[in-house]
Length: 132
Image 1 (cartoon, rainbow, N blue to C red):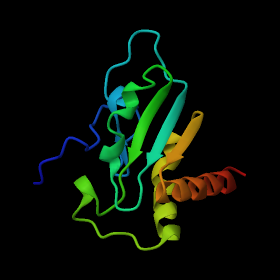
Image 2 (image 1 turned 90 degrees about the vertical axis):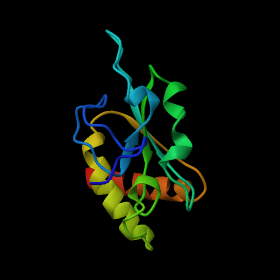
Image 3 (image 1 turned 30 degrees about the horizontal axis):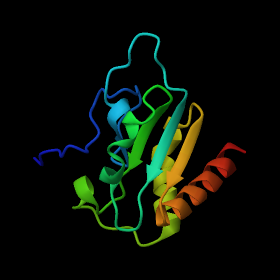
Image 4 (image 1 turned 135 degrees about the vertical axis):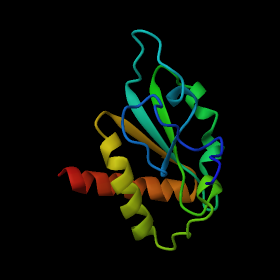
């Protein structure tokens, strides 16, 4: 049995949704909310090409009362290193959209750096087509 690393989503994290290896809750998403505290938006952060979820590990503390921050962990990176890399943007977005869709039950924001920005754009297009 593989020991989880510190970026592996925890069961019982802030959200009541089932964990997925695609999303790593960061800082504010991992702490218990204070009474009356409820973030108004979910923020999904996509890494640059070759990057992983850990580049966003500090971001949850920036907006703890505003955003529930999730870093996207692509296959073949960090805690998912044993999984094969995805070589097609269409495949990547298709799998990510499936994993993220249950989390889109409230307002959300997408942020991506470099290739992550392109992936964020494609994910937004996919989510818009799916909801239409």
